[in-house]
Image 1 (tube, one colour):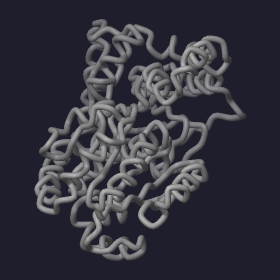
Image 2: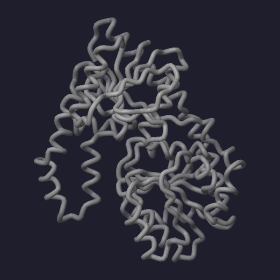
Image 3: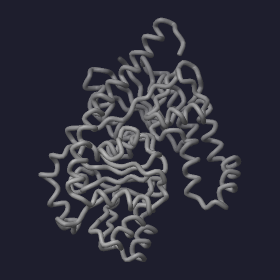
Image 4: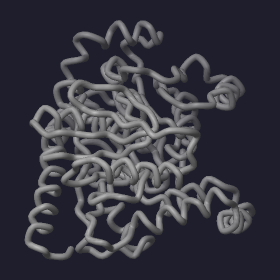
Length: 383
């Protein structure tokens, strides 16, 4: 099969969408498929052709140029990861942009929200998004990939997509790279580097957009747990503008038990060092980091706004919280995980859950969507 992949950045060290796409393209290549990647930029990989767009392009210009490139290639189908509009399979890894804007609104003061809605209706940036989405969700026979039931609902309610257009394919995780076995290699050395002793419970969170992923809530909950006398530590990876958070940590006297480590190329040692993974996100279609944590045998805590939370049974592999802004609820939910035996039993269940959602399973489900689409096209049937 000749497959075209469209993504802005083809980067194995980028965010969740970039990492997943790089893994998926590698898997397709290893299965014998011919893959062409269209991107602004990216990392070359063996036997995959990378076609870079040219110039400093707006979102609409990138989508138009990606279409021009894809039309000139001998492709059986085009799979877009959320940036273009010319495709047979559309899989926005960020979920619905309208849903993201809606959830981002919850981060604003109440008095600012009506003003912000007005700005979204007139500012060029948001109008550009609207023009892009008008062509991404067209009902022309393409398949829309939702990463969770939550995203499926967003597609239907916010983009008027028909059920017949949508397929649900949850993310999958590399079970060989992310495994509890990493603890034997990395745990003690990484905890010593972070200054964490054996009696302390290390909580881990990884995110790029700190506000959207609930980092402020996590900071407040961690301070509350320490003030209650619990031996917790928190390490947060990622983020772009750390200084405001560093100032908050210093102002609350939390520098001795909260560490911001910035961007990391390999999160495996941090998973190995951690005792639990926490992700109180305001919106996440299907958090890849949550699946990575489960695969590493960590109990998880996340919000109902995380599509990956649909896979978790609260009280078995971890816990779900209702309100990602509620640090009191989060602190109360984390308290049972301070007990080692509970963490250990939940960690075993977490790994078992991850094994049912492997990257291999994920990739084969995607390939199944391709085969369905091509068979339908050959028979002349509409979606």
